[in-house]
Image (cartoon, rainbow, N blue to C red; front, side, top):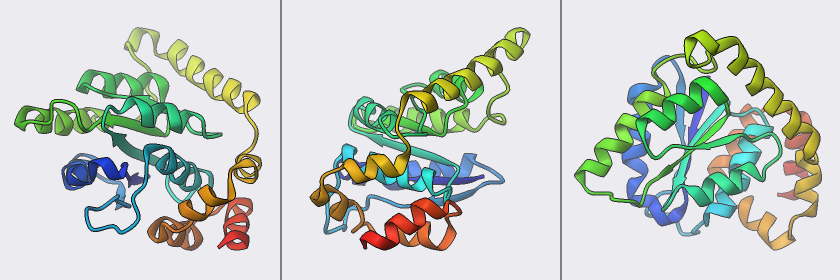
Length: 208
């Protein structure tokens, strides 16, 4: 699995903590850090980053994204606007574990700005640890695993039927917004070099 790390510019000082935790606990997976970084010239809101996440997942350039913003909730809501993205909100290690095992989505948002003292940093690390504690999608509790797995599949099916495809969404977005999103070079380069969804890749090539 390829795991991307990317968070809003409001929390650039937490990027290293988040990336280091994912590298440590997502053992056996490739982890790529897309920022946002403190020295970035262009600053990105959680809404703009959610589109970057949508592009990364729709292109199949990554399989899972660990993200966040100040509260974590805005990023979660924005990501769930993206076709094909099922993003959880994990303020605690327990929430991360349950999301991975029961909901089996492809993105998770952490509250990177709340209570970010030393204990907050430790909570972030423990939350990431529990996210990757076991293989995703095994169901929980174990005696109800079959039903939980079936429900997760149904959730994804309902979401797919309720939303437009990702290219249609991109075509409907404001041109200025798209221009800014496509200026995030490390995301665009990774998608063009590693993505496998031809429609998304071709769309990006036509707009850069």
